[in-house]
Length: 328
Ligand code: ASP
Image 1 (cartoon, rainbow, N blue to C red):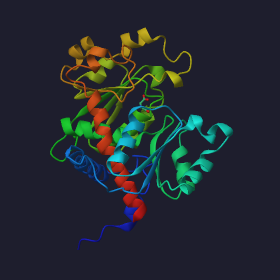
Image 2: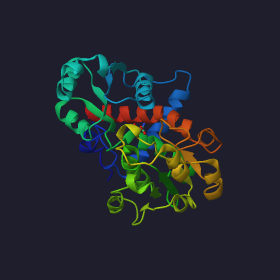
Image 3: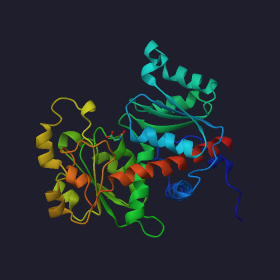
Image 4: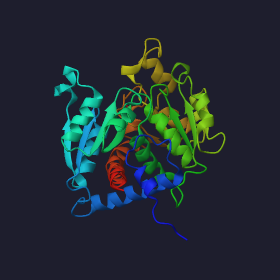
């Protein structure tokens, strides 16, 4: 007998803190929902009233262009009341803590907080003190769930089978793994979708990734860390360059930006020689001429702007899911 939708499962979707716990079925649901959201965006009304009256606040303690704007566009397209919290001009400068801030926002009728914070784990702390929903928009080096979800939607559209699975696909991720919340979240979603992820970067920025390999849902060997970019790009269906996170680098982690480009940059010559068919991704913002050359970023195989565009429908799907989870 088919049972009713499990309320416990619905309730557990009140927040989106991480993608680490999401199985393939949950990812497929979000992909399907993002597809429906895209149809809403493409229709004459350009959205719906599904979140009418719901207060959504973006609370970003770190800079952002794509993530914040696309969350705000997503919330507005669903009819929500959207507020941008400006950390710089708020009472944070007077010492207001994260806990105070989220409680205050709740008293001011915010039901969903989209939180970016420089400290790993901040969204979990916020979730313990907030009666509504927390969506993690990036916490330190730890996780960036919606970036991974939108990357999955793009890769699945281009490389997926009819169910969206990436089984048999090889995705290379190159660069500053150490400081990247994007790679940590993408490892979960891509391996859960069946892909093999081949990681590479300078030894100083890839430390610690070998032990991750065992912990992913995909088949054994679905995460590989290799020492050379040639090996990583060989037979890759897609390659994602990661930003050199200059704000998080400690001296000595890279020799120079020029040397980095020469050894690890996605240049058209390197791609032509090693991965002539591979699609190219970058989560942005790009250091053009460092981890990716401008002609590659703007080239015919680049999905960079498609990634940006995919942010709105996927974030609509996430907002809809957490609000339904809070109502369940
Ligand atoms: N925008 C992404 C992030 O916030 C990637 C990056 O900043 O490099 O993690």
